[in-house]
Image 1 (cartoon, one colour):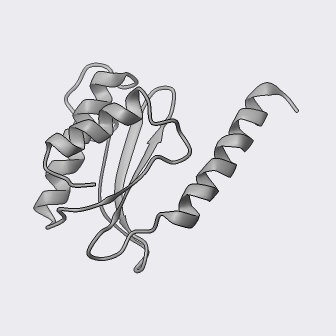
Image 2: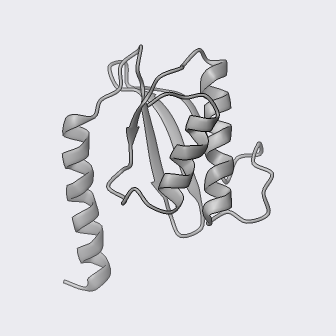
Length: 120
């Protein structure tokens, strides 16, 4: 097995373990984060209904930054997702890091969402 496939497999196993413990409800939905090499994505999800309450990414028209795959972009997306979630009436969320380490872009997004008013 090549190195990239092994990394992906390990991340998938971590993600499954996290999802066994973390689930979003109507009152406290799940803030899910995904990062690719070029972009950062965030969703607020109600797992009981299987619906996405709101989302934000560096590919959205609401994102005005000039770079998309760095810590500054993650901070902007964290602020944007907090603003959109609060407009939908969501104050508390549970954080789903998606198998990624809580470091760098994932941590920057979480900190910006907290500063934007989300509690987790």
